[in-house]
Amino acid sequence: MSGKVLLDTECPVCHARIQLVLGSAGGAPVEAASSLPDRGRLIETLAAKYADILDVKREGGRVVVRVRGFLKDKSKWLEINSLIKGAGGSWVADGKNSRWIMKK
Image 1 (cartoon, rainbow, N blue to C red):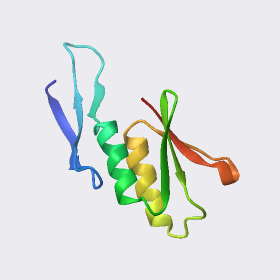
Image 2: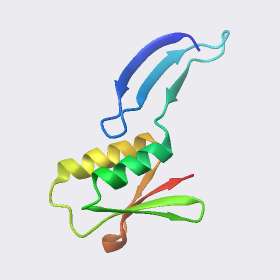
Image 3: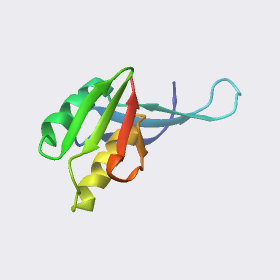
Image 4: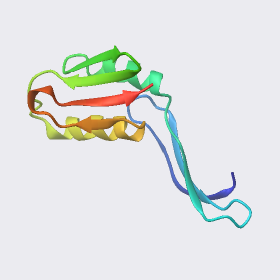
């Protein structure tokens, strides 16, 4: 797709290229497209980089990421949240059972 590149960056964890492009498809309404990092690679990288603070498990057709205990450093939580949300995951706030979920 040709169009205006709004964002061209690299994932700080898995180093995949992330590009957000704004374009038009033959007079159709303008749409946004994103090339997201490979989820499998992101999951492996998160599990390795944050092995001391995260539990990463495959449960059925999804990947569940939990923080071990309370994470005092909010900047780490924000970084992890941003990466997982950028790959299509979501945060489930549920007290001590809070977690991120990514569908395969």
